[in-house]
Length: 467
Image 1: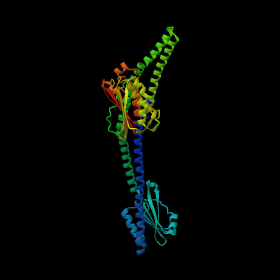
Image 2: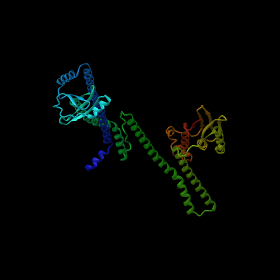
Image 3: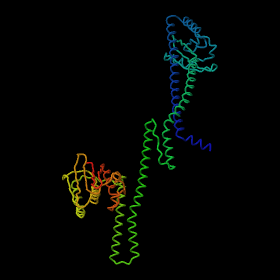
Image 4: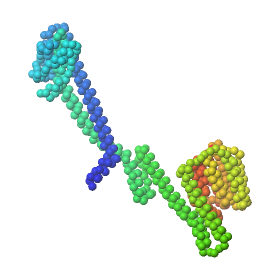
C-alpha cells in the first residue's frame, strides 16, 4: 500500500513538474559555476603569467644596463620582500647549469626542464607551465625566460593564495547552489499549485458529475488566462451536454408520442383485417390506409435523419448559383392546386432575378415546408403573401398568412423538434418537424428564420439567406 502511494506520488504531475523545475535550476547553477570557475581560473593564471613575464622584462633590462651582480642583488631584495615560500629565482645557462639560486629549502628539489631551455635557445621565447608541489599539496607556476646571452631566468610563483581564492569561491557557490535548489523546490511547488489548482477544480467537478451531480459547475476564479479559459470552456461544454440531454429526453418523449399514433393505426388496421370477413374492396382500403400510415411514419423518420445530418454537417451542402426568384414562383405554382382546394390565393411580390449560392434541393424543401404550413393553417378565402427582396447582403423571403396564429407562450418553441402548438394539434395533423427542418437548413446556409405572430390574426415567417 505504501509502495503504491509512493509510485502514484512520483508519477503525479506536480512531482514531475517540481522535479523538472528543480533539475533545470540545478543544471543552470552548475553550468554557471563551471563557466565562472573556468573563466576565473583563466583570469588568475593570466594575471600570474603577466607578472612573471614582467619580471623577465625587468631583469633583462637591468642586466643590459648593469651587470649580473646587480641582478642577483635585486633578486635577493625581492625574495626578502615576498618570502621564500612564495617565489624563487634561478639563473641558469642554456646548457642547464645553475649559476645562481635563491633559497630553495621550502621548494624542495624542483628539476630544470631541459626541453624548455632548448626551446628558449632556439626561439628566445619564454616558457610557462604549472607543476604540482607534492609536499605542500598545491601547485606553482614556473616560468623560463631569456634575460641575456646564454642566460635564462627560472622563476616560480606559489599559487596557494590563488587556490584559496578559488576554494572560497567554490564554497560560496556550493552554499548558494544549495539555497537556490531549496528555494526552487518551494517556488516550483507554489507555481505548480497555482497553475494546477484550476485543473484540479475541473477534475473534481468532472468526478462529481460522473457520480450523477449534473448541476455542478467549475467556479472560474483563476487569474491565469489559460486556466480561466479551460474552466469557462468546461462549463460551456457541460451546459451544452446538459442541453443536449434535455433535448434528447424531450425528443424521446415526442417520438414516443408522435410515433404511437401511426403505429397504433397500423396495428388497428391489421387487427380489423384479421377479425373481420370483409370484401376485397374493404381489404384494399385497409391496405391503402396501412400504406398511408407507413408513409407518414417513414416521412417522419427521414425528416429526423435529414435534420440530424444537416446539423452535424455530415451531409455537405452542394452550393451552386441559382435564381431564387424563379424558385419562389415555381414552388407557388406547385402548391397552387392544394391552395385552390382550400380556397386560398397567393399574392407574390418578387423581382424576376435574385441570385444566391445555396443547396437548391434543401432551399426548395425549406420554402415548401413554410408555404405548406401557411396553407395548412390559413382559413378559406384568405390570402398567403410571399415577398422577396434583398439588402445587398441577404435575400429576404417573407411568407405571411391570416391563420390561427401562435401564442406568445408557444412562439419560442415552435422550431423545436416535434413541438406542436395546442391549437395546431387540435386542428391539423403533422409531425412537428417541418419548422425544425426549415430552421436547420437556414442555419446551415448561414441564414436565419424569424417569426412574428398573433393569435387568430396570422403569422409572418421571414427567411434571410446570404447572397
